[in-house]
Length: 403
Image (cartoon, rainbow, N blue to C red):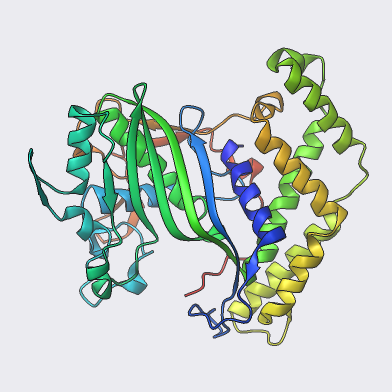
């Protein structure tokens, strides 16, 4: 389990409780069956991750971290805008017949500008500052270039970055205009955390803070049952774990204030007779319906009607089950040391320590001689303690993506 799980669930629960729905608006995205894809969103979320504590990858469900890091290397190291250089198919739908996504992402990174110290592209300029002037306050990169937007396959979602060095630690403020929370809520965090780890290593720094600002953080209508499932299932796991806790044994791992709060936490959760199963099973039922709808096997069910999904969401957040789950999420978020007390170990990203040049990092993914995408045995990356198979929630159908 990771601290990132609680940051993720705090964000999603906030959207469920307070999100603004665009049901009455005309929206661009559609589902595979042609239904308009509406969202609930919140404005200006800032999630902060301490990269000294863990590699912030959620264990709620699988995150394809190898493909995520491959994409960040495609953009920042290869500086490519061609999907033929990418070891996944996530960009295929936005590429032209030659594989180009236009003047987007890697193309922007590669553009050079003239400085008094010489000519640099965006990433090389950041590396120069980190090595030569780490106190500089203008280590800024930008991908959202207005004059080139009409030549991009897709407007950049993650676009603005500012790097900072404090006490020998490399920090990153990451600006994202829009985030599909279920499909990509962990993906972007993982890849930009990895970028910080890489740059820190080659610039003789330590990874510090990743501050992730999302202007429009949203959940699509058909993703609502999945989020309910994730929230309640993780709350159930914690409730079960708290029933096994020895309050005296854990006392040495907490401050007096934390131990007092932990005792209150245990008492409030354990003494509560709430059973999450009914709402979890209802969410699973809707997940199955979503899968059938995506395959065009059913029509006119709740999932095909965004207004009814909104009503389902509004009803769920008023239940005693969700309120207890939300209390558990907020408590675990506010007291990260409770992770240690409950016996959870945070994920760690391990880099090849021999690498001192940013361009020497080797992707976790590659292609074989037939062009099939495979794990790269020469990868410079591995992740420890990523226990999503034990702790993750088994969703009942493939999560659909709105296009």
